Length: 326
Image (cartoon, rainbow, N blue to C red; front, side):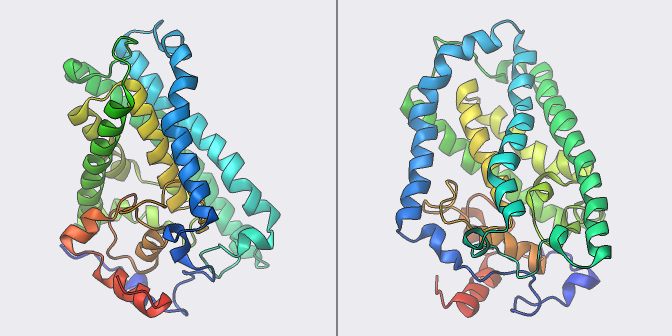
């Protein structure tokens, strides 16, 4: 399958002139041994080893008052406060402060549209922002919880367990998170590639590409049809197949959302907790995809692009841009 090339994108080349694209900071830092990588690994360790001990005493109190379908919907609905937390703590400081320390990791060479001197650029951004708020609300507050609820009704035997007696061991949690990640990424890769290769579906997916420069609002900026197929679909499918404990699903969801937001943050931060380990897709891979509108159809892991050979143009770009040979 070959991606559709809209007329405005077909002329784009992965060069320094056409990619508002790609930044001054070295993208290889995310997987290069450094103190930043150690910080990234520490964050991951806290998720895996410390979060269970914090959440376990309160898990039953939080969810036991509700029937299982509602409890699962509430778990999926946690995407909303986490999005607000991430936007406030991670995204807003570099966006607003404009400090040189943060800006050295900025991916695009163009100024942020809210800092742009051109009035028309700022106005266009705020119009798009208002649209993003609406699309984000529909996706996170209606579609995803609604799909989760439908799954619990149609497939009650595949619902998540909230039982304290079935609380996962570290081994069980690690096993299921790995299986969820590989399964979800396969589903996302296939549906994302389908959205690009099918003209009927691309008319919905091109909404996601309305942002010419990524920021965290673009992470959930999808047409409802696209959200249903390529976002909600793979997420619910992976959970249905693996059927993890609800807490495992929660930890996986935190990783998944962090990677999704990081994909669109606009900064190539080397301390990102979702980029430091082998087979993690780099932030530059998704930026490449948005810049030239082809290849790199996965976003959290690189394995499926490697298996199906859809990272060849990206690897060539990396070699020319950074002198890296994969």
